[in-house]
Length: 152
Image 1 (cartoon, rainbow, N blue to C red):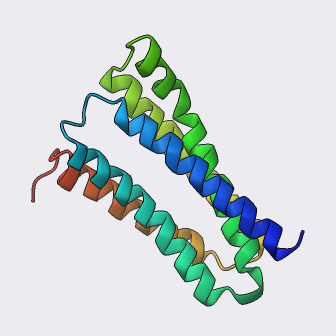
Image 2: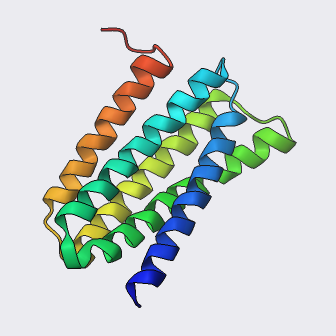
């Protein structure tokens, strides 16, 4: 597959993922304002944007394969959020437990897929651990800044 096809697929994956993630956040009653929703979505997007930027600058020949693959990982994680978004939209089943469970499953699957992408791409495992650190920071920001569950 040539680079332009990989770039196109990565763009499609990330756009679809962003749309699904926004829908997921938008229908959740745990968010009390548009500002909270934008902040939450922005934190999630920043994690992926950082990985794309780092891949662009440091991976040279492997960057487009890697970016396409992490785009697919991101999309799979977002697709896992679809049952909640659909149920919250059309049947008013939007419980906090369903929301959190959806997130936990999506994160677990993305961790496994990201690790697989790193191994299959032949890049250093440092990429995986870097992403895990970004994920931990993103979760911490969600719990402190967005939801004020943890206070420092």
